[in-house]
Amino acid sequence: MWLEGTDKVLNMPLTKKILSIKIDGKDDPKTAETVSITTDNIEKAYAFLKRCPAYYQVLKEATSKQWQDREFLVKFLKYFMRLGKADIKQLIARHNAWGNYDPKITGQKIDAHFTEGTYATRVKKYVLKATLIKFGLCPDNCKKCIYELERYNWNNKANIAHA
Image (cartoon, rainbow, N blue to C red; front, side, top):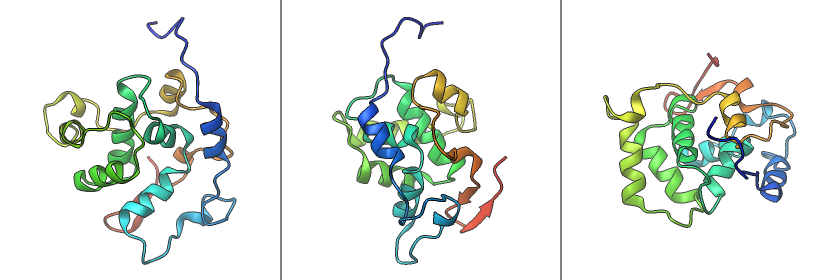
């Protein structure tokens, strides 16, 4: 396996900070799904994203440890959270902490996920938790994994059962 012998480690201070976040001051993620009506889709999606240390760390880490980390994030936003292309671009532009962020390049990479026949559309689903663990992104110590929650259709504002 090509990852064996690498020195990839989690950013533990950031991971601990992410795990300590309470959404709207509530402990139970299921009850925290209701967000103020005045908050737009991007902020609701960002609040939901903060529940997962793996994806939140990818968004907030200054340098990506591996090229696919950010691809995993886009797949999560598209297939699990069901955000559109413009919403994904806006969420990343607003909330990323990437040292090498270039809106043009990021936009092209996101566009690839919405263009049939590209490398990014070969697999049309979000990344499994086991894959996140394998790549050293998921600490696997959450009280309740975000994948165990229901998906939320941000466009239609209707809950869709996690498949």
